[in-house]
Structure formats: C-alpha cells, structure tokens
Length: 151
Image 1 (cartoon, rainbow, N blue to C red):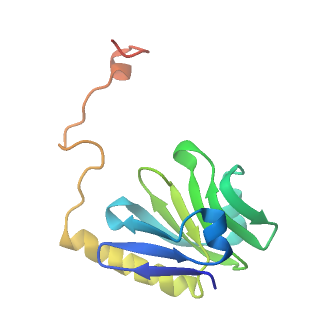
Image 2 (cartoon, rainbow, N blue to C red):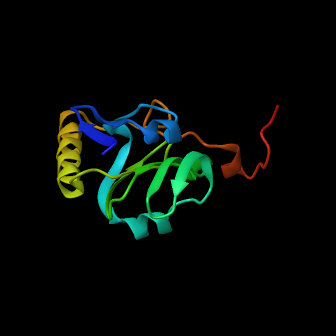
C-alpha cells in the first residue's frame, strides 16, 4: 500500500509514495493533535457521499483511486484512497484541510491507535483556543450590524 499513517505523541503523519505523491503534490502530511476534532472509520461510499466533487489538484479513477486535494475553502479535504472499502476519516479544525481520508491496511486498529493517542494528548496538555490568544471572543463588525469593515 502506498499510504502509511504514523501516530506520534503530538500528532500523526500521513506518508505517501508512488502515485499518491503525484496526485497529492506532497510526500507527507503532518497534523498536530491540537487540530484534530475526531476520528472515525467510514465506509467508502459514505465518505464519498459527503466529499466535494472538485479536484484541486488530485487524481481520480472510478472505484480504484482518489488521491489529492478535493474542494476549496473550508470544505477542502485531503484523500489518499486506493481499493479499501473501510477508510479512516480524521476531522480537523482550521486550514488547509477540513478532513483527511486515508486507506490503510487495518483501519479499525489505526482508528483505535489514533483515538488513544488523541486522548493521551488531551490529558497531557489542555487544549488551547485556535482563534486568538485569550479565552474571550472578540466582537466582529458583523455582530454589530455592519456589512463592510471600516477603513
């Protein structure tokens, strides 16, 4: 298999080789646990049903290969999937990706390893807010009725 997911103490790394490097434009994707919202195993058809259809950049072969970036903006997803029927889906906060979908040898074991490491990272260090430095939320112009920012 051309996709390997390595779990560390502060995050996980998706290592790619072969056609996945060409389609995805990178050899590895490093994700810290601070960005991970959740992990689950999904059937391929369910993951495809909730995926954007726009390839940007990516490679696709029906029912065989889906690798690279899909969608734009806040719905952008990274896929590295070959023939697997069950996939590991990792939901993320922030950019550049909202979701990482990978096809690994044993998706259920990988899911349990990711969940255990994510839980251990939450126990070791409390989660920090991703937007801003403090806990208080800053009001925006939109909350006060303004449609455009002031110069």
